[in-house]
Image (cartoon, rainbow, N blue to C red; front, top):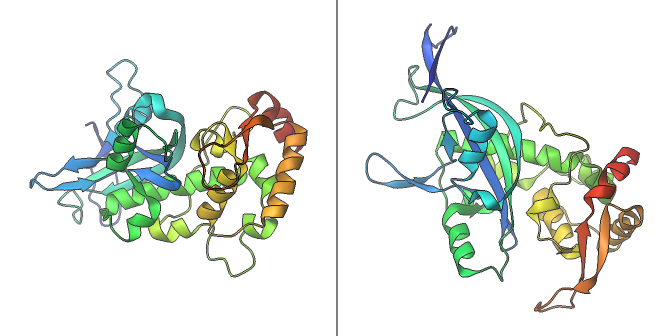
Length: 292
């Protein structure tokens, strides 16, 4: 782990050394629930705990820059072949370790968030076991899973950036009614009920991307996906019911403009009426986003 001596003021002594770490919070839909990658690690006292995976960037090792380090951290929660997107979230300076309350145990975290391919109810046994071991549904963070202050701060930073990216893309802005998108009416408290569960605060930086930001559901939902999965994703994330008729009409308008394509296939093996399946058309996305 590399350390950087920095001059500080206030209750932190001059010349305090900060460990620099790259942390990546992986989001994944596991059997219909938005979940976060928190692998189980062993503590020095022999107990185990869940925590956000981190690595130390090492400029002396070729290829282990910040981007590669973020991908490597994500791969500790899920295999690298399952990761479809990694974006910047922000920076956090935190006190860590047993001496977290002291001034000599400080770390600077460069935080990223990532998306992993979903795990469905019909997933293979090996994939389902991996997901159950490493991923925790976000609602469980307020009930059955305890996180230390450092891990909770890192998840909060990453989720705020993830949510910003979700609400910013052109397709989301077309699909969601303004009172849900901007949370200005109907007594909404915050943008997402998950914010209070995690303890999320405002993101320090917006993810940077080349060209228009790709919608978050691309990679997070199955491909192809039924319309119900997309609607339920927004409803769970924002804690607000969406009118099914209006949502479908907006969705059909988006299909007519190209970024989503309707396929001549339907769901199989579902206990309800099979829904038509759709796929995202990357080639048409830039044109649509430019007009939105």
